[in-house]
Length: 283
Image (cartoon, rainbow, N blue to C red; front, side):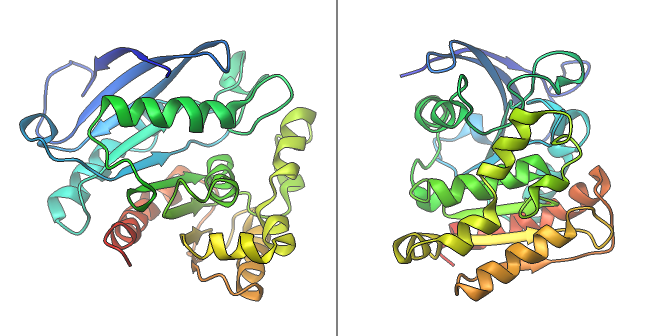
């Protein structure tokens, strides 16, 4: 099993411990990828003082991001602390993986969360990262207490992972995800490998072509999607919703006023956390 090599606590720029959850930046050696990968993890307030086990959420990032992007751009610690203090959500462990590409702006080779010919990211994620997190931290290590969420590129990955590996997840949340019409991604025009990975994992096509057994598996998962009415992916999100509805797979769908932006994702995440809480509680 892959081992987590380093764990560095980083709660703020000064390194002081503030009331609320704890952030750790971690490194894991991946035999599957043949390199080290990073991830960031949020441990809810009180984690160090108890022996309690927690549900776990994998929070993906958009294209051009890294494992720290939700910290740098998404106000994730404040969102999670506020949600926990409100007592409207269950305390959760939140894992932020790294799907960055090589080179400037993290947009180069190997960007994304999907497997390509020389980069079996999906195997790393499910056979190394998840087991290492479950071994190192007090997660409730079963399908009923594991969820996956993400915006944009990360939203497609969250939905596609649940479609392909339904035994791992009880709930999924996508914000502005590439859930249909993947050719509309602005990155797809300049990166053929990335474009092919998006098209090969098109969530709408998966639902449209799903077998009865696959549809039964999809119905064991709670589905949530949210996309702004001025987002360039809104048509693909509607296509996905209609595909799910036509195949009798229940899902919650939201369309708020907004664009493809961090503001939209920051303001949408609290509702997803409440949705996940319902799923963790057994719906």
